[in-house]
Image 1 (cartoon, helix red, strand yellow):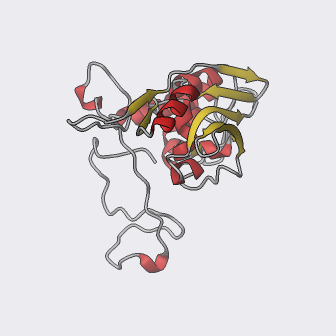
Image 2 (tube, rainbow, N blue to C red):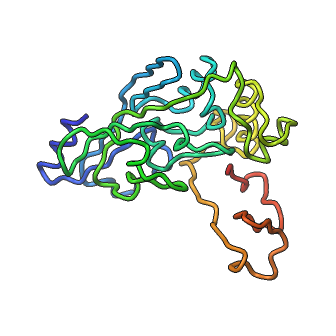
Image 3 (spheres, rainbow, N blue to C red):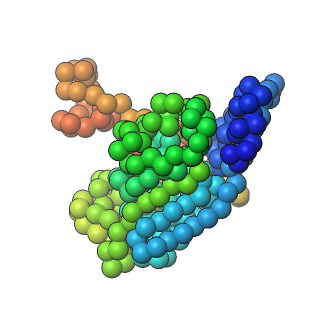
Length: 246
């Protein structure tokens, strides 16, 4: 993989790095350059420490951590794409972000022409953002390391209200890991966001979005739904297909 990146850079050829292929639409003219599909594999678990190769299928990795009885990414089940993409976007949903469990990211630095290991702090994670997203042409993620939690088969504390309601628990409660994962998958499926070969409504190029970050002073008086400190000002619920995960 590094050799392919170096070859493209040395030739001055544009490089398109592809993970799982979700959230990607190619125009009819194609891409005039080198397309590099990341297909590396590797799932290494040492106690609560997890290392994933960039090409590992993310949702499969989540399932394996749940089977191993480790908490921290169970609410990120069903998200398409590869493990290497997760720190770039600081992927998150249903009350969990990877920034809470990522300890290090091993990447190829195209500027320095060397492999580097970036700590969580060096990744500069913020809401759906990171150093990698800020400098998209500099780093190619090779491996991602996580520190998970052994909570005796229980999930991390449930944070997101919709998840808590679906589970019939209060925010902050823990539930069995498998229950948390299955509930999130059902929530995503109810919004057409889990691929079902028999349901064409679930076929798509993917989706991504960010919730608006608002202050009390920036809202309009006509907003009918407002909670102080919240980013939500939705006067009516969206339709079934328009609803999206957090």
